[in-house]
Length: 278
Image 1 (cartoon, rainbow, N blue to C red):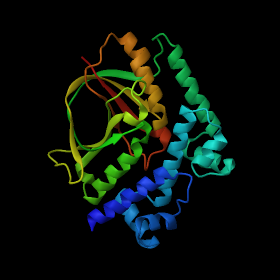
Image 2: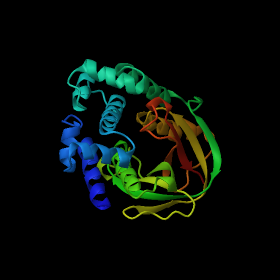
Image 3: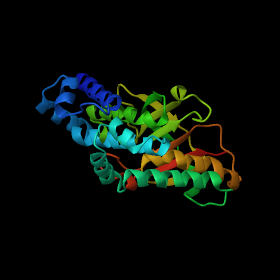
Image 4: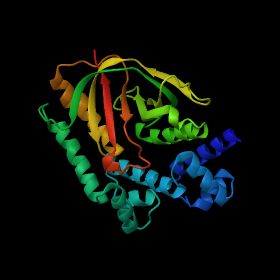
């Protein structure tokens, strides 16, 4: 039965991400899962740690935040695309999640990006340190496609971990990114959604092992919503690298997510961006 529940949960997670403007009520998602409303609500919460309603809102707001920062689409159009036909309702929901109105969130994100592209390397926008990092063992799932869409793979990953009763055997989430999004077509971008394994814990069935070797690395500490990570990477590979006198190693960069987005406000999320060095 465990595998069956996992399949139902993965089906629902995929449906939410693919249909953010659609009917994502508990009744609808229970139908997608092919379970009764009452039982589905309990199964979803037990396996993910959050209610269906909380997951739907979090995913919708995350998609909206990415769209606000990465595009010039009108706010009203973005609101409709994530299931809010009334812009006032969208603004309230977004402000509740991100602590500022959508227009301000967009303006601040674009202002930071502009400042990064204008700087000559003397703008200390983020905290960066050089560290000798231990290797990491991950339980993981692969993702191919736009990097901001890796969230759906992380949800599948953690659903599998929850179904296996493995939460006490994992640590921080880790995203590994293999390609340059400026030179590789979006559909061909390769990445891995992973969770660190503690001690000698084995990789649970249904997931893949991925090892990150120990390395001397530059680590940028970023505090804020995940929609701002692309801008932080631009700074890391641009102004910081050009002024630091360092060279990247021939190894993928990765992100370590130090807290849980299901119970942490977006502006309080802390992510370490790791660039292995020669």
